[in-house]
Length: 65
Image (cartoon, rainbow, N blue to C red; front, side, top):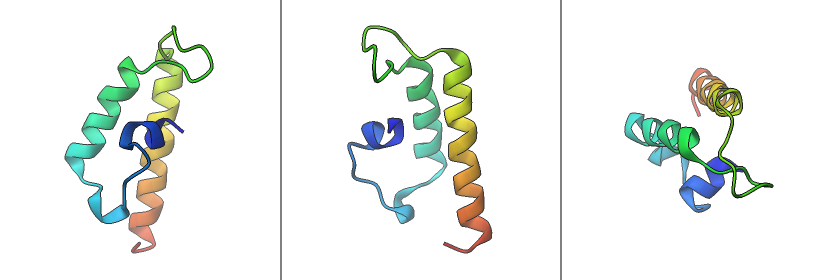
């Protein structure tokens, strides 16, 4: 949900590059929680979301997507 919010729901696989990934990582470190919008994400949550997004990209790369 955070990636969708970050990209405003408009991102294709061919648009994903190193620069976009770095910007998403920076976004996660300053993003607000989705439920409690006045609070920022905890560092462990941001790390978990980042780790998950890296795993998804790695799997897509291995499967030649």
